[in-house]
Length: 362
Ligand code: GLY
Image (cartoon, rainbow, N blue to C red; front, top):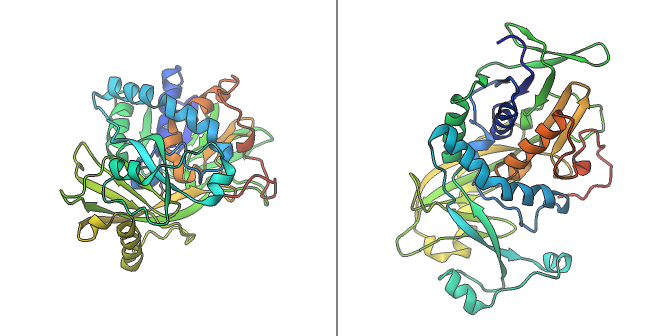
């Protein structure tokens, strides 16, 4: 391909869903990936479309709701290109709330113990208060397979094992350098998440790795689980259909330890113990897998979405919500690249905000 219209750095879910959106609008897109596509946070995630998690910063609400609303269309687009169906695994979440959540949102309806015992038999409700959220979950590994097959059915070019860097030439021109060539796209978009290619001036918010360790267990037949259980500290996410059906994912630690993905048995044991306190029937469940991923976190808990210089854009820092936010992020980034008004106000996500801009801490 001669120089493309848009060069995206990073073939995670954020980069590839943007590539699809741009391609469907007629752009020639090349995606450069330093490793393998969808091999990092995109497939480490639990897959909750947690648009209503009271732990989310309020500034995320409208982007989250838009993205959740776009999900059926996004999955249908993947199906039409790939022939692969991705089904929602669950459609509701039992969320434990604390007093601070109830103060922040007086509209929350607490569930009675009687209702809880019907919704989730064996749930330990002692000293806990729960609300019911309409939120779906999916298996990010299934999503990644469908997304990758969809990309391959298009003319989008994805180059794996191709680290890139952006070189500003003059006041507004940008080049993309790889070890073997120099590209001159009309626009570049940094979707490298925690790996962040974009050099922002000191004092600006940056995406940095925030490690999450997790495990998967085989649910015992005596513990039916058809919804997500989530507290401010942990979650239990069942897989109800597809190759992982019968398992549940338990997560996750939140650690600032750089690019280290080591799994520590004592951390996994702590997650297991917290999950067992919530759902005692899983005490003897067999652990089938453990892993760690690197979320792209920012100091204010909000992504960086927008323009850095005339040709240079960034879409990164989706922290715990990359799977949820991918469809809406692809849409709004495609809109701003096209010079259109984005579907939601992106003011809180401006990449040029400073660390002390007063945006709420996560
Ligand atoms: N998306 C769930 C987590 O960050 O642990």
